[in-house]
Image (cartoon, rainbow, N blue to C red):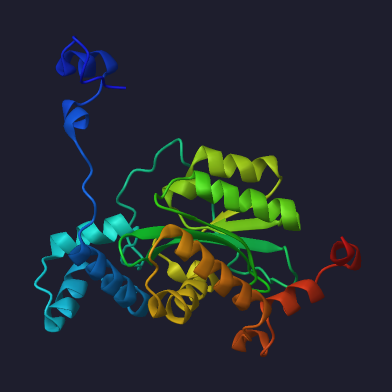
Length: 276
């Protein structure tokens, strides 16, 4: 958009385009190896202590030899897309273009596949850098219906995952998310409304409202991601694909009486859906 070789000065180009001058000169810096290692450790601590904020995480890291301030911890947490999870007063003004929907699952009895789906995004560390993983989960069976990875936390890869899940498995009655901007966007909620799906959203900072997705992330990271150091995005995609197939088809779940998500999911479908 900005042409540095044009006769028109860059300052004038920015003024015409109504852009801040800093954006014309800013060159994004890659995340340093030291910060990548810190982000992985913060991610591990966040899984174990989701209530820990920047101060607590800073104090947990210092005995490990990490001389880091809480502002740096906060910067890395923001880059990772995580925050301390606890009930907070609603001090921020909601964007009128991003309405928040009520949580519909509190007293709901979930007794069949495709009754409720849920989704979330998590941070996946690699040897150099990181990516984000989004997954669509069937709440009843814990089956992962679709997933995508991306190097940015945009809405696009979330939409792709939902569209794939719908095309392969039909429509759920209710779709539950957190209040992340990807899921409150008009593009995301519009897709659900077009499909006639009820929208449910977690309370702000209430990780228990989407607890089954949080359990999925813990399994993915401790049983796959933290045991490996992906060298590339393609390696991450291949490794996650292999693990999620194992998770669905072979990994027994204690909460499912030792059965797999696939066994529970397909056993609960109507015969005509299984045949299809």
